[in-house]
Image 1 (tube, chains in turn orange, yellow):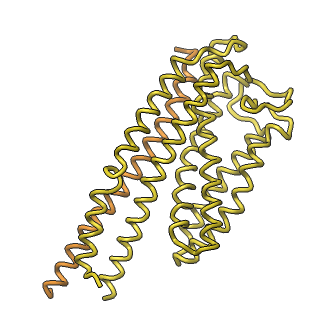
Image 2: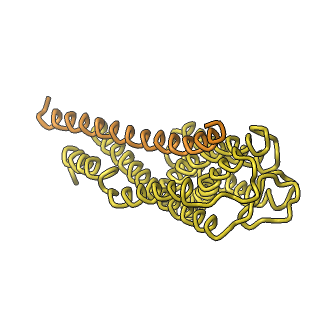
Image 3: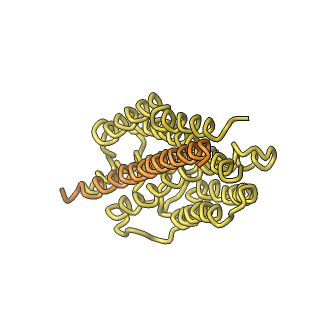
Length: 50
Length: 254
């Protein structure tokens, strides 16, 4: 294990950074979805004259 | 003219259908290629014969992901510079989105380079870090692109933000060719395995056998497809974000 520790750490870096970045994209997508739903409700309320 | 309700409905459809479902084919191909690249790098590629210490020999395999990450970092920053130039000429917001997406994705890959480099350096050079020309220029480059995102965050007006970012991206791109040539121009301990120069100070270099070269080329292709996939999703996300902003303005100021 001692000799392969650097190899394992090196590859872990690639996967961790990739997954963290993909997670931020997914999160922003979710946030956007919530915002659209909120806008939709707002638009409906204004359409009903509330 | 479309009503806000119709606009939000259209945007909602795009949010639901787009992003992580729309590019499913591309995402799948990219995932398969990355797993295949991992297999080739860890199991298929032969050991570098001249490296005798086991830790150094194992760490050499970091090269198969380190070099493609650096390649994508360089490519992404050049794409951002081209997009910046196109934006300044045409003032089309599409190129601003391309520039932003490319810097962001490129920065993720460059972060991988900055973190994996010291992990390889420790068993090879016996130090995590040294202020060698290549490492110093890479750090400057990395900070320059973090600065690009900070600059965007500091300017509110969208048109000014895009213009400033475009000029900044063009200037920052100068670091890319300097970075590429650093291991060929100056005395540095960073090896130039791809297109090597005559640097006798380099430590940790190795000969490129056919299978090592084939693995590297495969990893370069896999990373390029991964970059295209991330660009696709990031551009789509930014388009939707701007659409949502526009709808919000329309609802608030109607």
